[in-house]
Image (cartoon, rainbow, N blue to C red):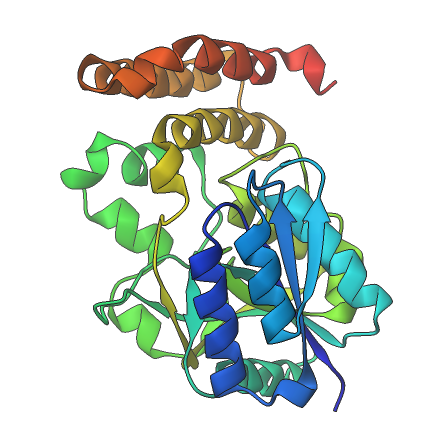
Length: 306
């Protein structure tokens, strides 16, 4: 059986990375794993270097923080170069339960039409995170699941992410959560590099579209379980996270949904209103207002991507 490369993306929160590595070593056969920690230019790396040295895992230090896709691309290239047969993309706030990777690898070995498989994702309290995608996210789905409308409309959320019953069964899905999934090397060679035009958010939808285009299936495997300590990094930089969200949404709507000027502007104005409302209570948002306008402005200009 070949090696499985695990790419763990780190920024600032080295303690989460340490827990992630520990859970991997406690629940999997270390001889079958090659762990790569990709640091996206954290300002302080001393503790992270210590953690990687003591755990005997490879640390790759990116000179710049270019986001989720770009950071993972570095790790994927390294894993493929090292001859890994399977590659796991992992947030550093993931903790693995026993046999998780083994089961996902067994699934891919037995289902050659599948290029990606994702596990059941639980909160630290043990509740289910409904974060895999039953279908491609359309423009209406964004309004129904990612705006204030989600608090009054249950059907769009169930239609996109599935209900509780959906997560009981092993099955094909459109896309899995980007926080943790496994892909076979042949699929990685087709998908890599991931689209680096988004810094954060919408990566799952983009990967799902590209998987469909390449003819690969994506699977969900409830027998594999991870715990996701959600938002441990983005909560530290919330205004920046909302800027990334707005930019990625504009890009996804235009490039992958083919939305026109009016639809894109409506969504952008909604995100802008949310940003401004946060600014009424939080100084950090007011301080980032000029950055919000500058960064989203780049994505709003169609000519940037022509």
